[in-house]
Image (tube, rainbow, N blue to C red; front, side, top):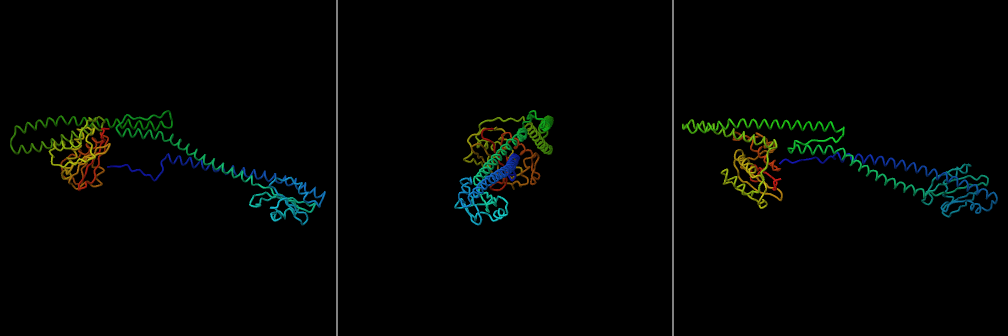
Length: 456
């Protein structure tokens, strides 16, 4: 039995298009998110730094003015600084250090910032104070021999940036998913003509030569659709020509064959000599063989042309097998009817009988004779199996043993036209079933036919 084997090692076109859209959306969203985050972070930090500088300069000026008015009241001078609840001030007057917070003091002022302010300049530096980020701003107070340092916390800014990063990450995920959805939709739109073409091709392979495609006004698809429709039309014309040719040839051959057969019958009745009878016997055998060949070709041509029809009726599969064996004088062949075999099935009795006859003739001609005919089934199918006593069918011959005029390498001078199994295939195809060959359990070949139980 031939089976479809499809590679699963590669993604399909739809999956690849969806993945490409998702990846592009991910790259674009991540790039925009990173750019937006860095731009926002830079802007907020610069604004926070400028605000901290401006606030520190004003507070330093107020502290300096207070020290000028009363150099001894350092705490009073520090009270003039308008700082936030979390900000801290460290003041150096001469060699003495003062602060507004118990947790922040001289040791928290970076040495580099301290040296910069000592040189008479002002500066800022981002540092961690008690594991919390701060902007340290230093201002020189030369007029009072001092230095003013203010620590402005940026923890809220960091929290804001963290939330911004989370929002941008979530947006990137959403955009990626949206890109995948768009990719899926786009791939569906792109593959829709392909699916329609596949459906039409499937219908054509099943015999529906009237199948055609429609471009639906898409100018890009029109050349492909026109080429496909032209191909189908040409294929239909060719099949019809070949079917008519085969039918005509078969018909023309049947008339002289019938006349020859009648003349042979007359000659046999009028001539009783043994030598003449032997010659007439040979001629009769060849004539019968030729007649069978023509009839088989005619039957195949009709079924391939799509004019074959099923005459469905309810039959008992076991009884049908026994009738076929009795009609072909094979009453001694063993019949096995499995418990799973249906008691009744809707099939074309004539065609199923012809299938069995052809398999039996094939077993006698090439397989050393029929050993057993088995009947089994399932809830929706019916199976016939014919076992022979021959050497079996080699694996490399099982692919073409059902072709027309196919004869195995062990056929030798065995009688037959090579059309019996080809006819089996056509009869089974009309039943929407399948047929294959495998090794029989006891040796030899087993030909198996499987058809639906309900006649469809």
